[in-house]
Amino acid sequence: MKRRNIILTSISILLLLVFIFVADSSFDAYKVRILNLCAIYTVLGLSMNLINGFTGLFSLGHAGFMAVGAYTTALLTMSAATKQQNFFLAPILPPLDRLNAPFLVALLVGGLLSAFVALLIGAPVLRLKGDYLAIATLGFSEIIRIVFTNTQRITNGALGLKAIPSTTNLWWSYGAAAFTVVIMALLISSSYGKAFKAIREDEIAAESMGINLFKHKVLSFVIGAFFAGVGGGLLGSLMGTIDPQMFKFAFTFNILLIIVLGGMGSITGTVIAAFIISSAGELLRFLDQSINLGFVVIPGISGLRMVVFSALLMVVVLFFRNGLMGTNEFSWDKVIGLLQRRPLIKRRLGQ
Amino acid sequence: MLKINDLVVSYGKVEALKGISLEVEEGKIVTLIGANGAGKSTTLKSIVGLAKPQSGTITYNGKNLLLEDTKNMVRSGITLVPEGRRVFPNLTVLENLKIGAYCRKDAKAIKDDLEWVYSLFPKLKDRSWQQAGTLSGGEQQMLAVGRALMSRPKLLMMDEPSLGLAPLIVKELFNIIKEIHKQGMTILLIEQNAFAALKIADIAYVLETGNITLKGTGQELLTNEEVKKAYLGESTHA
Image 1 (cartoon, rainbow over the protein chains, first blue to last red):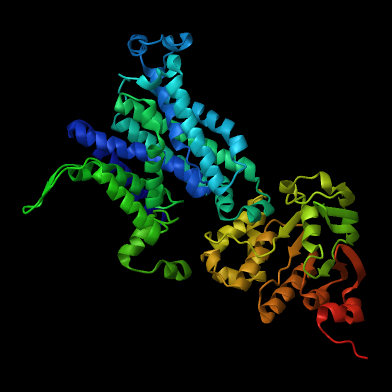
Image 2 (cartoon, chains in turn blue, brown):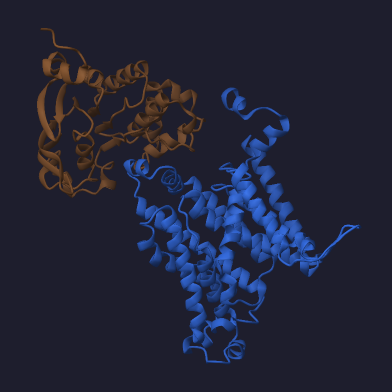
């Protein structure tokens, strides 16, 4: 039983590697970009699902964490000459102009800085619950955006950063996604994961079991922010340009859509939904153009595809509260059980 | 084991406890009965540090419990079965029980205790893969007790375990409480269901609007006329 699963997992990993290799060498830039986005949204979705889905903290500050990670990574990877070109209104603050680091280090520093910011705001904010926490974290993310717009000499203000070295490729983004999935899976199955879920289910009961609420909430918040920072860094490097407008609330909403659609509290669901949402964003582009139905021509309305997402969210919230996966996870046993059409419960009892 | 001395707790201007003293001896079932608003839950809250007393002392094995943090209670051996069950509804029965052992690191002993809880509550074993929210009220209460037992408490405190359960289930539950006690657990039981609680109690206290008005063995109070009149719903025989 166990060995079969290991073999199946190895085969899938091998297939994924082959696929990335083929995609990397022969797919056109458009498709590669979509595939990159899928992986980056997986990282971002998982980081938000840890906070909102597994620990049950209704946090809407994700765009802020991504901004911190994206700006840090960008500033650390850009060359001195590029920085000088970017900062033409006001010169960049001294130590930053020569600061440079390899991409991996820059990503990690971006993640750590984002985690540090989460620690700072988490300490006061995580004493709040429910809607109040949502409002406070939303406010935080807007504050980050406004601070970034006004610190001309650090972030280049509203002009944003351009010509960020595009290091992100399929290997980087899928490497990061795989790393995030593994870390999340390990974390969730550890005793920390149990405590997170207990807090989500019932804080009073969790506390009466001796779980330190505050410590675990901050921990979940900080780890989530770390991965949000890494995801932001990857995204900045993929786009090649970032500016504060990018990190508006709508960005947080996109990630929220992924975790709600995939299932709050499911790693598998988040991965699936990240792929669906980021590829659908491109596949539905035809909706923005004028549509010829033969007898009538509907003029193009840009942004119409976003309506699909809004409608999708409403349908999910109304009829599929648990999303695609609920709190279930993928396992080979379940897939094979499904193929053999034997109810899971029977195998558990009777083997 | 646990000693409360002259405890006064007030919420704003309202005094919920007006100086109560009680003692829980090791290996005994002590029950605290009283009507709504008598101060039963406040007593429990003060023990675990959720309510801050104005004056008085609570000592546990000679240690001042008032200085202890709520989150360290379980580690020092006091576990509360909270009022209204409060199981984790979307987690399986097994996960619920495992979270009960959250503060322990001894994997083997935890496994033994899991078997022990399953032997006390065979129904939980049958339903170990079921989500706790899908259990019946009685089963949820048993899960709540089982979950508390998984932390290997020295003192088990229960806040109205009979709340909202059918009489037959209450009887079953109290039999199990008795069984747990027989195996050496000290229990502080807080109940409105005076009859059920008094029947299994070694020592019982009656709490009335913030004062302890009666103390005695369970049997004594069961036959006490005042208690009969006020809590057991029997008219006094003239």
